[in-house]
Length: 104
Image (cartoon, rainbow, N blue to C red; front, side, top):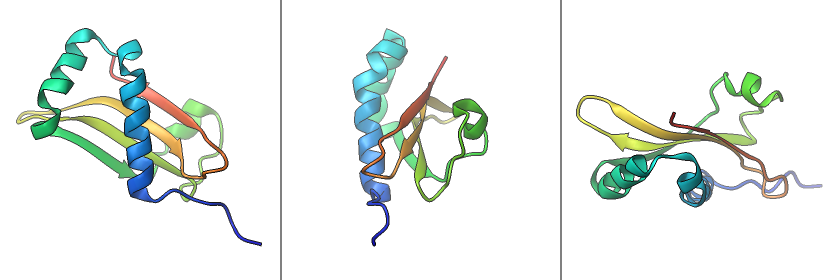
């Protein structure tokens, strides 16, 4: 019996970015969207990593790092980074899950 079918880091990053683009107009200000769109080519970043420990209390479930990724989306500026979204997303193709913490 084989294990779960997992997305690669590249695939899950792409999927998280698609979800971000779809939901951003509902959760970010027009100014944030304009800034992101104007500067994403030269200053934008999307980073995939192991989920941070704070996710367990946010989503009230156990987060197994091999089955979830955290994807951070933002702009890298000279003085500071602007994070528009932190995405917790399931890597399991048969168990979709996504939770986003948006820039306030």
